[in-house]
Image 1 (cartoon, rainbow, N blue to C red):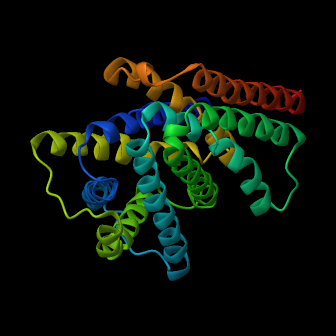
Image 2 (tube, one colour):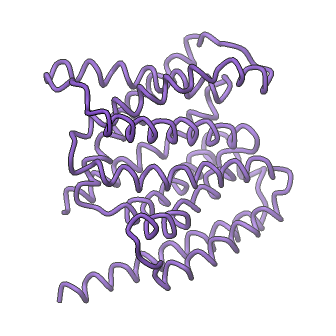
Length: 293
């Protein structure tokens, strides 16, 4: 179990850099995700071929994995769009709502009622987001996109939990990246028309950032997170993902000087969200200890 938690937090640390790369890469969000999924799928295909583990899953499983790939593609597009519409700090602070959505999505799939502690946490998270929204109205579009991205992230994590114990993590991630890439490719033309953008070939700097984003923040991070999900439940994973904004906000302040774009309302709202998450984590840990004893 300790190894699973270490893997989970390593994956979250790597995900903490995704917002930084999203800000640094000077391409549209659609092209960032398109290249990210393509590079990740190729790297995982080579790994699976080397391990002789590449095979076609059954149709039922392939359809389920494909749907998750679609959710991941949409999650990433809205995530990077939120960063470009606001900044890394605002987008990632609102991304903390992934625990809120997970608290209500997972019980639906498990056919149980949400816990009282989860509902209370949700109320505080909503309050924190409301304060950020009122204090950073200039970034309203980015905040809304970040909330959509959080909902999609919570959804695909819950669905991934049912696959984690049946398949090799690299195997699942490969097909999710491949099917997500295929879906996104089919949507590029309408996407270009809607956003007024066009197909882009990355220059050297963007190419290096895309490789780092794909190989370390995606291939490695997704694989070890799926390995962790074999032992860790989806809610705990989504709850722990709330450490990602902390890493990203600190990095964004150091690299992009984003503290100059933020006000007291932002820090107040973010503090409320993170405090609610930490408090709920403490309650969960205490409950588990009581069950064990």
